[in-house]
Every structure is written in C-alpha cells, then in structure tokens.
Length: 265
Image (cartoon, rainbow, N blue to C red; front, side, top):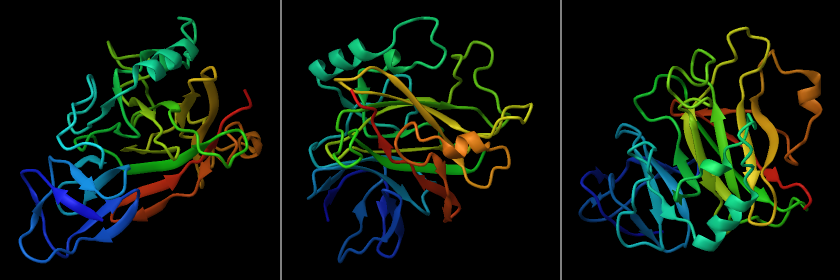
C-alpha cells in the first residue's frame, strides 16, 4: 500500500501502526523508512490518521494527493495537518452555518480555512483515556456517501467542564472535520466526563452542515455502559444511526464508530 515515507523518525519492520482504527504490522525489506513528522504517499487516494504504537502516539495525515507536508491548522494542535477547503465549498458551508450569536450549540461559522477528514482534538499532553471515533456520513437514504460534510464537535474535559476563564464557551476540546469523497471522518481526543452534577451522561456534541443543507444538531455521541443514559436517549435516532457507542480497547486506546445519516433536505 505504501509507496514512500518522509520524515525525521523511523518505523521499523515488525512495529505496529493504526490506520482508520485498524492495527497493522509494518513490513519492509531493506532500509527502514522514515515516518513521523512527514507524509505517507499511498497508492489509494485517501486520507487516514496514522498512529505508531511505540513512538509516543504521534499522529499525522496520510495523503496520496499531496507530495509535501501540508500546512498546520491555525489555532489547532501542532500535530494536526489539513488541506485548504475549496473556496466554493467553503462559501456554501458558511452560508448554511447558523450565524445567530444566540445559538448555544452552533460552531460551523467558526470553521478554519484549512480542515480535513481527520483531526486531533486533544493532544498527547492531555490527561485522560485516549479515544478515537471514526465513521461515515451518508445522505438521507443512509447508503449514499456524503462528501464535503462539515462536522463540528465539542466536549467537556475530565472534570465535566467546557470553557474555563477566557476559553471559548465550548472549551478547548472542539474541532471541525470535512468528510472525504467516501464520507469518512476520524478524530482523536480523550473520553469526556459527565457534568459535575452527574445527572447527564458523558457525551460529545456534534453538528453537521453540508453545501446544500443548514447546520443541524444531531444526537450526541454517548457511551454504552454509562448508567446516566436515559430511555429517551436510547430511543433517539437524530443522525440516522445509534449514537450510543460500544467502545473497544486496543493497545490502551478506546475506539468506536459513529455513522451519520443526514436529515432530508
């Protein structure tokens, strides 16, 4: 699959890496190829987050379309790379973002100029259980991929708090993703905590905006086994699929899949 690797660190034969949440072993005859801090150039035209198990869990984008390191996302973690959004797509997304300052949950209006299908929301320096959420966004038929869907997400910290002091009201654990040609997305963060009063289950808020449809709130991601999940939350399907995820633990990292079906236009 991999054609070329560029960067200052190395991945050796027999080491394991993670791509789209799948654990794979790296095999290469001859000299070891460089990995961390660079760009994978692959045969398949796709993006994917790469995690090297024994190299401090650094992350970066795999991109077959680019042959140089991509620019960093302004205002995001230093280990997140992204691509500029097509100007027409960005214009249409912003037109469909809710701009009302009184909207407490909106976030599409703040999308940076560079955004990708993958993002690191909580850097490796953050305490907490590492969590990777991936999935696909589909049209309202729940079958047809929905590329160029903007996902805005945010969640609490380990104390169940959003913003502190001068931070944004949604806190520092917030970000944006733009689905790829197959509707795929993935983000890495830490597992959030319930609100301090512990009357609401731990969750990750999400909104979806497309070039054709208005920013919309969908069911928050919840985690199976949380005793605070209500019967109503178990029945809700605003987003087309079950938002309550059963997480798997591999190599000390939790992972889950949250697929989304867009509302009818």
